[in-house]
Image (cartoon, rainbow, N blue to C red; front, side):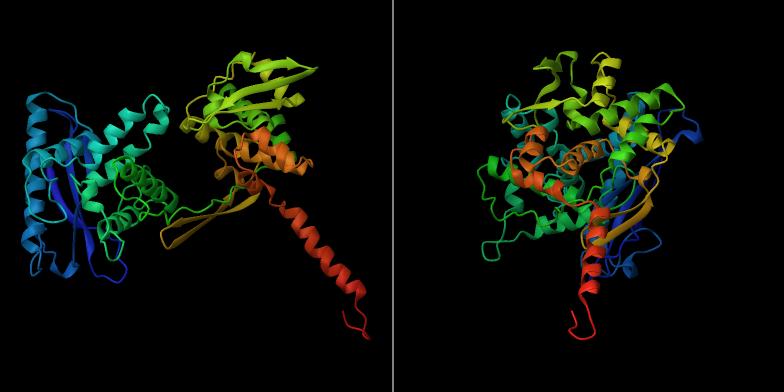
Length: 441
């Protein structure tokens, strides 16, 4: 095993300091070949000025040099202990498990006096403890998927500052702000590791974590109104046009699997269920009523309130449903999102798209063909937009999509780009026709 500490390349705004990261290279199991070496890279929760970081991977000439170096020494020691125990127990390690075991060493040791790394005072439950209690309390009221939403938030707290309690994050009575929460949000945007291995979480993800933290404060009886979500923003999703849906429907696919994914997506474009409802559908969910085939299901989004949705099947949706005899066999969300991009590429859906995302104050723009951005959820947006394109009113669209508030449905009412372009040109043509040299406009 080799351990090294290094400075992250990200520079903090108005500060010369950089985050200190830890890299561990270790074998997956005893006797592993060199090619089987795994790599773990995690933030140590410490920062320093690059001018104070030495070739020996420690800090000097800094007011907190002793505190930081002690933390780095302990992490290196714990990494060795974890690997030795795994070797004796013949335990197979992954980078994720390795880090969890190091954090467990941190909790067991109860070491360090740094305000950024102190363990929880005796008797006070940590954020992880409160989250576990919250999940247990609501397990009979919410779905397991809904309850899991606090897990990544807890993981990031444990990475940023192990053992943090809700009492630690309460705001200053005068400013009504929590410096610790603000530092944590800065860490999420600038340092946290994403699933794809990149650094820095998107603002909407940070917003979800803030909302989850607010729920735990409320559950534990602490003040929570002070903690507001200042990160979430509305993502623009570009739905398919009707001709594009039909182009996708008729496009030949090179494999049976891609044809299956294509059919599921097109069915969603004509019916509009969320992925969770799409995956749980049964053959009995389509009924014949008053001469029409009706898709009937109960929409849920983890909440106690359930909404019954009934959607008449268009001939395309009915053909797909009958061909599969009501058993769509919807795969996992990750798989369908990966495969639908290949399907869209095969179908030639390559009109240019501009995608805009926010990561804190950073605006991230990405351009590319449509197929690079398509996901399973686009089918639901396409359904709502196509209904409005076909002159259905907002109330009808609201009922067909199971929205509890008409404000949610209004987001689908944005006019299509060709209509906007036509309206813009028409307006200037009318102005030009009414303009004369004598009277102006």
